[in-house]
Length: 427
Image (cartoon, rainbow, N blue to C red; front, side, top):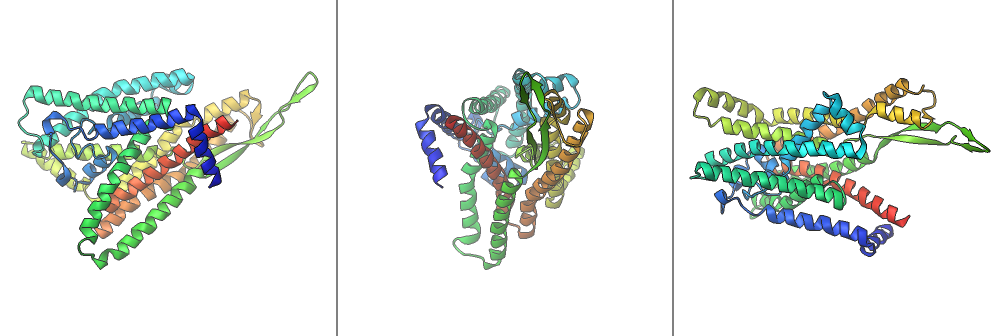
């Protein structure tokens, strides 16, 4: 506890670190203000009655209530996340993009991020159009002319791009990942309303004793989720590394031993965010097409919507997405071949393993085994609240568990980065 207070005092004393923290706080305040400014077509409207749909409930949670307020940032950072997913998928198919992302250093990363930002705009147009048409069919917005519709799409797209820009400014001038912090702020801002709704539905004015076992199970699961996320996030598999001795003149260099840490959850919270993005928009699209004037199209997508809204199907699909995205994001961000090449260039080797290809295969084998544990844990812990919601029929459980998972992961990452900044200034 004393160590924590010492670091808080250091943040207050260090001007540079204090500016970073204040910049993050100011950016989050701006985000919350934007989330409560409605688009012109829906001033005074509210989508509260539509959130029995699980997809819209998740989406509203990630936008911090921006969707329920029909605000100018009701798309949130969803288009940017989708663009990032597409760009990272393309690195698996394009050698040029892979070279830009992995081999050209910081300049390559900036170029890659520029491509992601450019792709965000058409995706935001597509998603904004689909969402506005859906809201129009639900009667939330009415009487729009063609020009008014285009104007509101432009406003929604601009809001999403503005939020993306704020997130990147937070990453550059603040502390932590800006996009993750925006999602974190949205979830934290939404939690009080979820708790109040739960209390007035199940506890006040008349408490139903039959839900007590479910409540106890939920709180126990919340403790398990928090403990599990902390343990898995901190867990790592060390690979021993030895540097060869080199003699230069009268001095001997190298000969030291260290280790290469392979984290169990190398991908962090990103697979959950990716999976939610993929899980949400097909359901919104199906809801949009199921209201089509064409009876055949309407009938087909009504059946598809029934399947997608089935809790057990959605849980299995969600688990598979989280599991696959954990492997995918780990493969994109951690390249065993590049690690092996860098070790060989630095005169380092893994005891008992030949340098070069053998080292790459050895690291890849360990990475695959460790990632399997992390992916299995993330997938299981992500669908657990959905299963509890299905068994207890309490809607708050499904949203609360996923929110808890994201919040804990983002807080851990933020604490690590603050600790790194504090340690750097101490030295």
